[in-house]
Image (cartoon, rainbow, N blue to C red):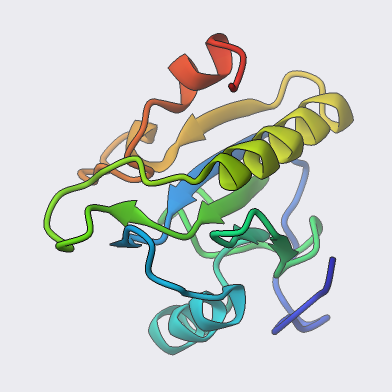
Length: 151
């Protein structure tokens, strides 16, 4: 794992209570790196958004430490770990679609299990499951996937 684009001067995350799964809203199969996602977010939000970005090959890249606050769920970033997978939109870049590769699913399951063990009682949800969010992100039902064993 490697740390990219973070600063010790980032706001503190606070006590970890939540983990939110996101998609990058990039077309299925398009090669996008974690570094690119962080640069896009820095341009848009003035900071790196996610703690982890999962690339198409399943490489999980840490982009923020767990004690740093990201910018991924509006006013709900305190105590909230953000994980984003590359993809989430069909090849034509029109419709939300669960485009996770088998490698991405495996990496995401590993990260979720790690956080569930590290922070018992952590609430895990998709971005779309937060009140007031009108997006399809992460383009799959996170709760159902966890309940089904994260296969």
